[in-house]
Length: 306
Ligand code: NCD
Image 1: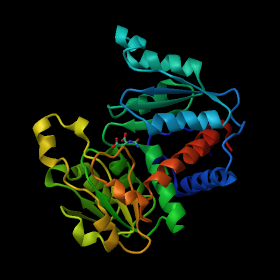
Image 2 (image 1 turned 90 degrees about the vertical axis):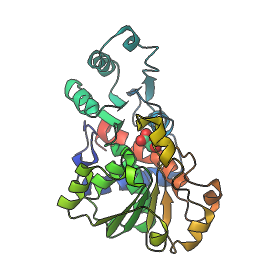
Image 3 (image 1 turned 120 degrees about the horizontal axis):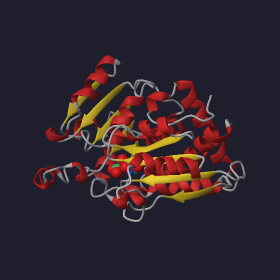
């Protein structure tokens, strides 16, 4: 079921497969030991054409903790891309040198294309404004651990709905695990793209677009906060208009219902006050930590089938 799978979109996986993955991750997490030898002799290559901290490092850490090794393409300026080599030749080389390739790129379709030309599995580590399947798996993993189920929850998704790929990727997953309701809270300029809205409509996902957070504070089970994606704006003036639109503070958490959690894929800029970190609603560091175990489970599954 898992061996040699590419990970390009969360939609490539069934409910049963995702629940199986979460169980595998939980098992690794519960061992409370971070040294395994399942992937001894295996090599993971990372090729990131956009900045990253957590995704790149947690994939590398996951591989190292499973006994494997890693190599990194590095900045485009230090590889042959700077000499004009095309991405397909670069990716082919990574395929010869490694057993699994993790790619992040600003263009949609690059990881699917890489998967077509590579013999080894390719993992999409964030692409354009639509897909970030492993981040979604991590988000769902945290929700699943908290609520013991992924169905019938109310989500309040806050921030740059238009550009944040973690949001559209999460929305895609709502066709697999049906929420009760999804509130999309953003400035008017940053509302969901039409194709995402029609996806929700055709999949029977109940949603409502709002510009303020106050009316859902007492209703949502999961608050999913993202930064305004500055790098996606072609006009800096447009960014200035919407930056700082939402800031989650301690006051907000006081109105949240018992057991509600706050997720954030990180990095945060100014949308989530550090004062929230010590509240019982703050689940974003646990979410980031769980990312290591989820990626360990995923790498082990696609490289060994276990
Ligand atoms: C996100 C991304 O790259 O889409 N980061 C991540 O992988 N956790 C979120 C972001 O950059 O805002």
